[in-house]
Length: 318
Image (cartoon, rainbow, N blue to C red):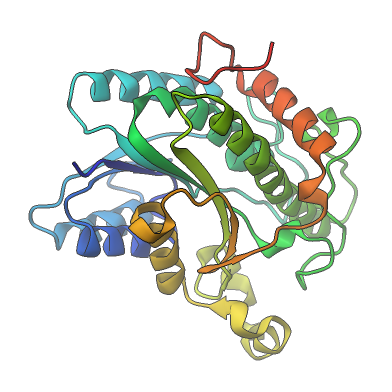
């Protein structure tokens, strides 16, 4: 039976074409789509609704979810668990952690939970959501984490300061700030993507070690540099220079959305636990493969995300 695909940031530049490809190519699946603002006044959510409206028999639900609030994330997870257990939706077959946040014009923004908003939205909230919902998967499942080449030190032309998993992990949630708002903002974004990618590895280890969840596999994908992303709108005058700097990784959101959905649903990716650059299996950064840092980040993320053994079906280390 086709399952439920949960996609965060569904009204984003990548999210909307991903939804279109899912409904076109895999219409038997149920799409559970989260957006920060589900009101009719939100222009991006309206674009999402317009896309969905072209599919008369689509099994789709749009739900509001503010990833900058862990209370909202846990409440949402409780509701989805309840709905799946009561057969309102089929069991999950994939979670796509697509939503992110960045700010290149101001200093760090601290959420009501006390965390830098960039890392909370990209990493901490998604970790909480994923771990809370593991028991709502069917027999098999996939988790797709959105990474970026920015998690590599020195690979992205916008990067002035390298991403880093510091010795004191609390520096991730209360990052350094100085007068360079743009450079430090991009560093917070690239560091969040490094955290996402680093977390992939212990997630897979713990899933494989748990017999009841070992058929759930996680992958991460760098979807490329999306020139039509709303987040990069201010850079469009620089398109000729961007093409020289980024080469074949500079592309539009539509093919990136296709890649993300294929990783989530296509049978050829069953049992894959890997890092992808666009549609090709590749390597993540050396920093992301440091096992000591992986375990430290894993344990700290459990603390930040308020995940205990009572909050997840995954067997946690004692």
